[in-house]
Amino acid sequence: MKKASNEPQIPKWDIATVQEKLRAHRDEVKADIIEESLIVVDDFSQLHILEETCQTQMTVIGYCSSGSCTLRINMKDYEIRPNDLLCILPEQWISLVKSDNFHCSFVIMTAELSMQLLPKVQNLYDIFLFLRKNPCIHLDDEEINLIRSYQSFLKERHRDPHGMFMREIQQHLLMSLLYELCDIAGRVILQQHDKPMNRKEEYAEQFLLDLSMNYRRERGVGFYAERLHITPKYLSGIVKEVSGRHATEWIEEVVISEAKNMLTNSSLTIQEISNELNFCNQSFFGKYFKEHTGLSPKSFRAAAGKAS
Image (cartoon, rainbow, N blue to C red; front, side, top):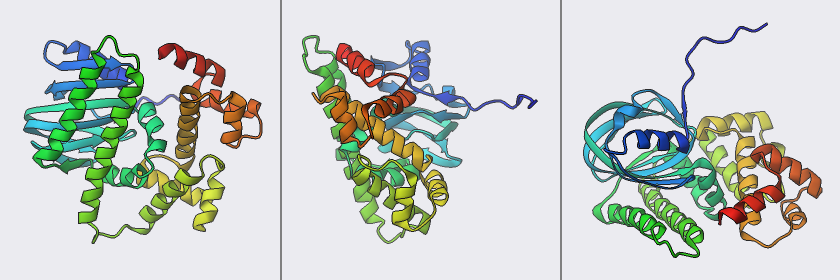
């Protein structure tokens, strides 16, 4: 019989954990918990809660307004100063090294929500790889004001008690924020065009590009590996090393995100959605969807309808 490990487990921080931490410091932190999948933090300085290493299960976009701090992200130290944009992605390791009167503002969304938006922002795939390796980008005043404007507008629109389409407005604002992030990161990438990618990064980028074009009809790692003339095992290992997720995890995330989008925002029947995503039949689609979400497509659609 295998003995249970006595080694401490690295805590996984999801948005519920952040909500709990913010409530514990509600007298010190200006935050709006907009909904279960999205938080906007006006001014956050209680970084001592990050003194213990954790693994993120969410997407965080923030900027430093004053002071400085050093964060360790994936075993590398980054010094964050005023006008620095911080982008923390799911499955990254993070801990506080030091802080000096640090103040920052954040937009925090669940990994699920960010992945739901990803298929609609195709150009984010290659930029995603860049942001995993470069979580801190220095911005000029105009760029910082853009990020600040989205943060303020998200809160302002949420506070409108008479809004009939708040969910749709919120999603489009978040998509616009991601486009701005893409644009900013894209400009940085162009400035660094003289730094070529290594072979593994090229494979991972091509896999994500192929996935963005073929996920509706191909869910097997073998298909994508064959296009790159490498084995499925090697491809999965490369993608895990470069992006933090195995190839199968990327495929599942994108397919499920698109299925959720169709169930929530279209009038297609479940059978038609199954056909659009190239499942052999509706029953298999239902099993696949429930395995990854815990709900049947019908139950998910009903719950999404009530939430909206």
